Amino acid sequence: MTSQQFQAIVLAGERAGGNALGKSLGLPAGVLAPLAGQPCIQRVITTLRQSCSVAGGILCGPSASVLREAPEISALLEPGDYKWLAPAHGPAASAFAAAEALNSHPLLLTGADHGLLDAATVDRFCKDALATVSERDQPDMVVGLVPHERVREAFPDSKRTVLRFSDGAFCGSNLFAVTSEAGHRALRYWSEVESFRKRPWKIARRLGVLTLLRYVTGRLTVGHAFQALSRQAGCRVGWVLVPEPRAAVDVDTVADWALACRLLEDETAAMAHPRRASGPAGEAADP
Image (cartoon, rainbow, N blue to C red):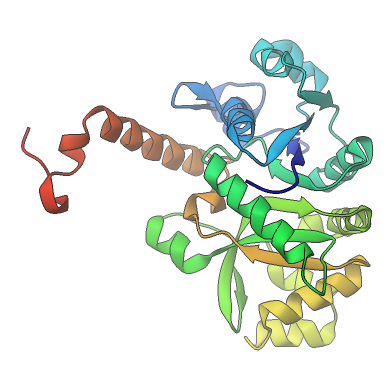
């Protein structure tokens, strides 16, 4: 449990042209994709409600037209701890609008497609993010990074965007903490570079020629990368490790949805038949 409670910003907007996952499933939005009997967006809100670190917030999106087609989303808002806000023209602009509307700190940002997120991961990230604020170089925004090695070991066939630095390779966790009003500047900067989200080297180029050269030659450390990012964003941006590999999986493609469904089905089966999952000394038990 953290000493301060966060308010959450859950991004649920659709990019222009709609979501391929939603279209493939015949749904008005990808965040409605079913996972273990619940829409993905419901799993995320439920996880945040189970967290000791989060006390309500804003659901930014989906659009009003999607809300009219999806009464289950309106039902999620009935308790009143989460307010709906219309999405802006992109995730970064939506995050900035929601942060301005809440006008409080600390804030937790995540996506409504983060269907494998669990409360323990949320609590650990929030605790670690606040711990960085007590240090000398107090960050205004904190980014969660998952070690790529953990993700590769857990999901060897899954394709993920990887940030490769000289002192380690990481995947994003879709977990961000805004710890001060100055952190809103990072959200503005995010809107400038979000079109490069799948091409890390282009982001490195925006951070300066020297930073780009260090990145493409494998000599850029994660610390130097965040120092350069802080200069460009006009605020202090830090990072923390998120050890849970599932935090790197957003359910926004058909492949990731299939992966998430398989993982949750295996979990359900293991809970229903624990002796079959493992017997004495970790060996499979006899039926």
